Length: 143
Image 1 (spheres, rainbow, N blue to C red):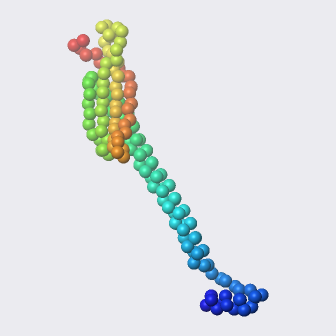
Image 2: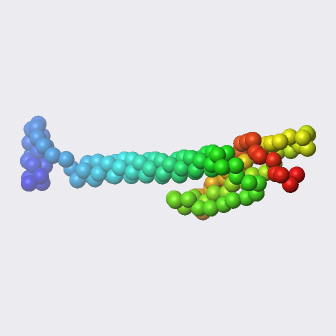
Image 3: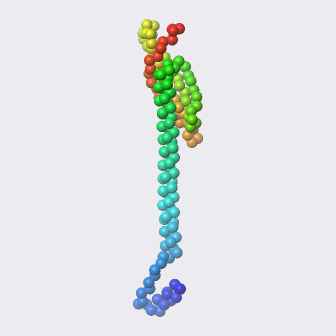
């Protein structure tokens, strides 16, 4: 039908041809632009979701580390190391060491350095959060 119009237009040079549609090239160019735009949007959204998941894991690790420090304070955890696993594939380690003091012989209590480390798998490696605090600790009677 379009070929007849073109032939008619060539036979009548001053005539106005009304073309009420898009050509195949115009449609293909529009679909290509739409496809590229959607691919970029998909990449942005998937990266955002991945970063949100990473932030949630780090927040859970920080919360667990804070909880371990508070638990060590509340229950007067003895010097040494403790470790374990928590839900969400988080592994933790609690390290309690005496804080060196100058008047250690006469003190009835002394300070302890408490370090909580929580680690988790991240891609091909491992990430971790470490929190450290200084707490009062009962003196070991053998000292």
